[in-house]
Every structure is written in C-alpha cells, then in structure tokens.
Length: 305
Image 1 (cartoon, rainbow, N blue to C red):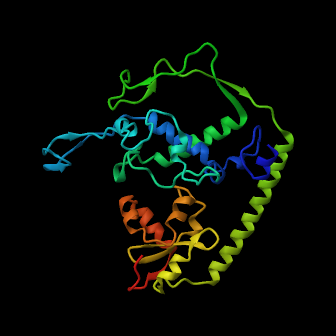
Image 2: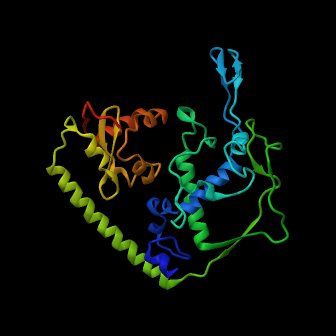
Image 3: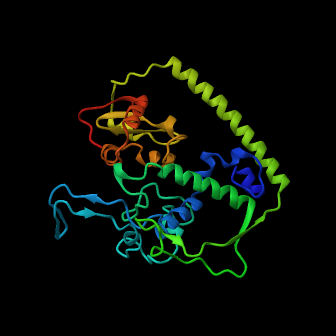
C-alpha cells in the first residue's frame, strides 16, 4: 500500500476523490484488460441493430440481395478461434501489448473481431462514457471492498435464450450473487497518497499557467511548411506528439490528458500519417473542427510518411 501511495495509484481505503480521477483510472491497464475480456466473452448484446441492403452486395463467396436485413454476429465473432486463441477461456492478458517483464499495457488498437459496441459511425454513441464509468466504479469498489462470491451460491450462468431484449442481451440466469466486505483503512497510505495528489495538483496548475502564458506570446503559423523529419521526431510525451491528417500537421501534445481514447492512442500515432485511421473512425464534425485548434502547419509536398 505504501508503494502504491508513493506511485499515486489506487490503494485500499483511500478517501481522496482525485485518486480516482480520469487520468489515474486510465492508468489501471490490467483493470482495463479485464473489462475488455468481459466485453469479449459477455458482450452486452449478441448482435447489432439490423441494417437493410440498399443494393445487391457481394460478401466473400456470397451475394446479399437488395432489401435483405443484415445483422452482425458479435457473440460469434468474439468467440471465433479464427481471431482468438483459446477463445472460450477468460484471459485478460490477450489485450496486453507490453513486452515480457514490462508492466501490463492495454493495446491501444482494437483487435480484429472485437466490436462490443459496433463499428464506425453507427457504433454506440455512449461507448466511451460507459467504459469510463465502469472503470471508475470498479476502481472505487475494488479499492474499498473485498469482493467474493456469495456463500452457498453457484457461479453465475450466462446465456441469450431467456432475454427479453429483441437483440439478445447476454445476462446472468437468476442473477449474480456477491458479497462485499469493507477493507481496513490504511491511514498512513491514505495520508501519503493525499499529500502526493495535492502536490501533483499544484504542479499541474503551475505548469498550465506557464503553458498558457507561453501560448499567448507565441503565435502559431498554421500554414508553415514542416518537414517529414520534424514530424517523425515528435512521437513521445517528452518530445511531443505530432501527426499528419490530410497533409496538415497537428500537435496533439496538449490533448494527451483529455483524449477520450486515452493518451496511448495518440502517442502510438506520433510521427505518422493517420489520415486513413481518422477517416475510418468517422469522427463527428465537432471533432474535426476541434482538431483544427491543434494544427501547427502543413507537411512538405515531397514528404511521404
């Protein structure tokens, strides 16, 4: 607990609210891997809402006639051995992309065959909020309680056959019974964590004041030409994170803290042309206009990433 407190991590019994801030909860990579594995095996819905083909459409060796209703089999894809090794086994580490011996790190890119919230522009609009709220709830609950299966109760059994939902929601038959026992408060660790958080908060406030003042003094020429070499040098927290979208260069460093998908997604894209990924993600018009705030120039015409 003392080590966790020194690192600013969630610790049993800590009452400091900011210990469970968005930034700190997003650093709980193993917990995030567990959540992804839960979403894989026990995804909320077995399929997405049906879509109707507007024209005859080829799909592999098949042709789907115009007017046919089509639904994606999320449940089948999430348990398909083609995409998942030991597909029926609960293994959160399948979402870990860290090298052996390194701390667990959730892969920043969605694996093929994994779409618990759907894909693209028709994906669930609340997926980010749902995941963040779930992680926050888990972090607070686990840090403050021992969670065990209720005595005398069997393990929960899940299926889709008894669902009242038309799309087939995966749910436990007859419920899921647990007991929560309050953890003992570690006052020393609690005090150490609180002191660290207050110090971090003050340092962050001063840093932002300095950045704000510097920004006011420095006007950015959004049409200046930036070389490929310059872009490729900026792909870390220390050196900043730059990338290219449709020939324009953006400095995403200030957004590392607030990006809905987490800082790792931006860092992985540093020094690269992410035009294709940006388009496939189907960002909203708001996101597109918001991105312009981080534009710092245009890529040299002869540059190729």
